[in-house]
Image 1 (cartoon, one colour):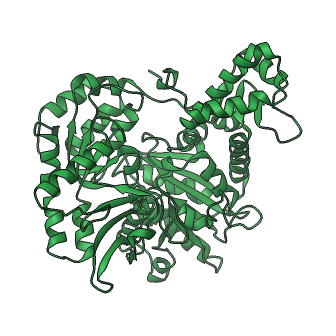
Image 2: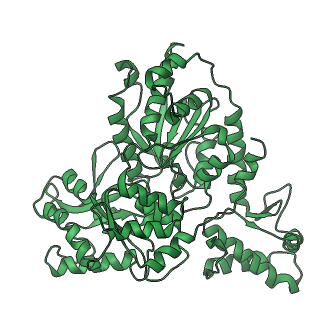
Image 3: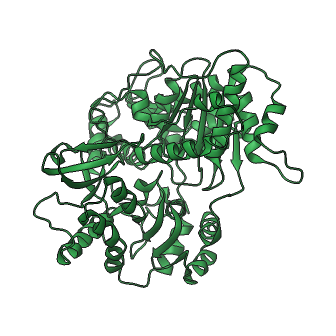
Length: 547
């Protein structure tokens, strides 16, 4: 089932936008209600992650007659074939397609690299080594996509690729300037940890290892965010200085940000995207990674063998990804140590899981120890609002801890309050998705919010200076992307809604490393697995037609 076909209520912004443009159109007054409804649909679908909407013949004529499009000048709307865009999103999509095409035609130095590749990858006799295949593509192409589920070795593979490329560059007496990036601070920290761990096992000299960076930044920091504007320091007129950019968790990168990233690459540079194409697409418009992998099979390698992600969690993820809801439910119903259905009271179970974390807070343990303990368990909700949503669960968990005297709430802030930043603030170097913990600061003798940065350093911020945020004993599954937790509880609502999709459930499952419990009825779980989102856009067509 494509949930984009389900009717959902329009927002006040959708109605105001459509009314504003309709009043400025040249359409006949009798046609105004039809145009207004069409423009409201465009606004709404864009807010739901679609880059455009498809029009029939009569709708196309209406848009052409409206005077709201232009072939030669910037106009509010853009009509391309049967696709209607807001001009800005057409521009992002078109520019991204053009820049990807330029990457695809960019020449890379030719090397006799087989013996070098054999040093990093053992050639298998009876099966394909997909990691080796990814390395071969990355050496010979300027643009490479490496996709695969958890534990398939995406990071291990890319570290070997970086070493290979540095060794090849050394034959010409130079080294590559490499940038490593991820969409969120949490994803950046995970990649940084993996890079550091993987480097030690490389079959190369210490000099080559030193040329592989371990510092990972967020994409916003890499590009140089210029708040409050949507612009960045680096673009086509002031490109990045790097010879190679690697982006992890690329499924989270929306159309606008990916367009700006590729636009900022200097001529002749390489781009490697890592990600799981089966995860949720970005919160904002587009399904860029999925479109690119489908449109560009010659530039894509899917790693198929899982080295770390095994057992019942993997079996459940496979069943969910294939929409085999009965198989998935039977796996959950077995209630093993790895996976199962939650039988306990929801709030009591959650507070029990966080008890060790609060004990460390009360014992005034080192912040990094407290932070690590908090990250061992996470509640993941499908919805932010409503019954069993993030807001309700966070409120009930806080109330329960208050009743137990485990926390002492006298205002918005209290010792032990975990929060998630919801808004980028480049001046403070805090970004959407960053996790902070409120603790007593001995130096200033007042409360401070502590953040662990991607480079391992600790940042303290006064509570009053923290950007828009919310308590995060529970977070949405969308916000959990790029993170991993030892143990997860996935909470679904009592009734089905359009947010619930197989991609959402798959993403929740693949956040858990050791154990996973799901709180849901069979009816909601099975219906959710039958829903999937197919985002409307033109990126696939613009690339697949030529490649």
